[in-house]
Image 1: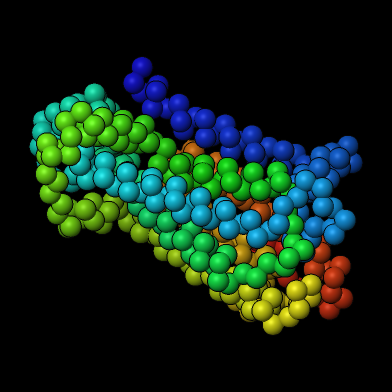
Image 2: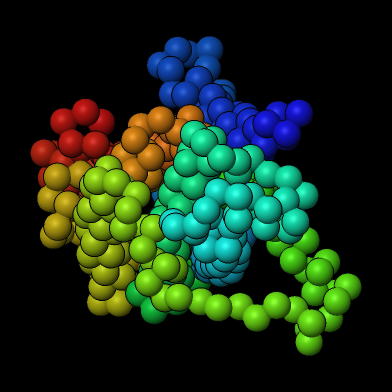
Length: 337
């Protein structure tokens, strides 16, 4: 029963990613009977320059993108701090099995953390979640900074309200997907800690001793694939930062409604390198988990489908807008799409 409860959240997240991906995949099938679905989804996905000026119904200002990253930063930070506290308290790298099993049972009333292989697997999952959330934190904080200081959204730029809601859901569900395997344990830990604080009071809480090295040491012991994943992550992270800077500079150097062909970095090979970078970033989470986490795989598939769908439309817009647009560029994935 306990194991079944621990699987509820991952299963719900998997269903959500599948439900979000299937309509996009179906709408992308080149069959005339599916054109209506393609048109509907395109209406939801359009924003900014590729949204028709006459399509203002059920839309919001594109500057509301800021909401995504405010929420994502707060939520990811909360998940990171609570998961890290749980990992340090309940699954330290060096401690006798009987000691932490007793503490676990006392604080959370029973857990999947037990002696033997289950303990080691759970230790790995918890510290892996901390590792992935650290990467996600770096991503959402940078996006928050860029939205405030790099991008200058046109006053007329709009996005569909359903696109806004989808974005809000994404930035709540994506960080949660990175720690879904241990989220229930962390929740029980937090609830019982708060309950204990209320019952016995602040003055009677046991002192907390933090050893800085023990806070970070388990992250270095996760394994080589996590550091390969981190390397892939920062490859995408750096290129996305560069591409966003290029896009921001174009807006700063021109009138509000003027557009220009972006050049530099990955713009020389694809029309939407910021989307390609995003794909690399979420692909790095799959690499870091050893290609074995189904929830994160489905998150990646949703990102690939969603951004590819939007990139194809942006690529088409560039060709329609500029007669001299480079014909050698792909939409988002070099030599494929």
